[in-house]
Image (cartoon, rainbow, N blue to C red; front, side, top):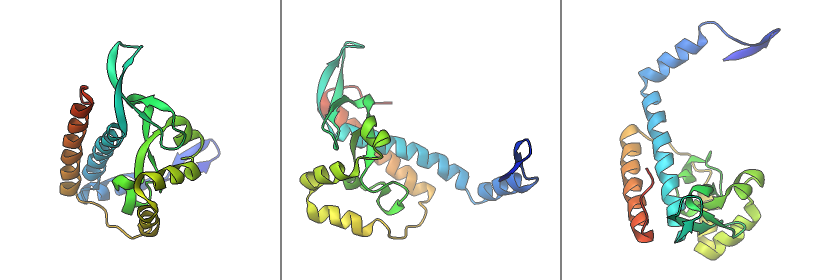
Length: 175
């Protein structure tokens, strides 16, 4: 923690080290790193899942998966897609819900803050009004923090799913 001193942010003495020790004692630091890996794998899977074709990328002359942004419909290469959310990922109950996540271009995801109105229209066409309402109804449910074993299990699961999607598209799986 810090406060804003006369010369800028100043670390309050003793609080940072104590907080770090408490986190380490509870195993949260390890779980946090594991969840970063899980998010990377999950994001790769969602973006690969939403790629329908493989196109030649003129920048490297290789075939790369390409998919459409769920909000605006622009065609993007896999590396240019982001894993966008209908309900923001801070709501843990739907963070890893495959129905809540879709490939989205950077413009819609970042600059238009998810382009939610267009996202919802496309999501209704993709999974149906009932499924969208279910996501909207359950997103505020209280969820417990995932333990490390669950995180590692999901990471392995989504790694395998990403490999399957890469094989479907006939491309090298992302690392």
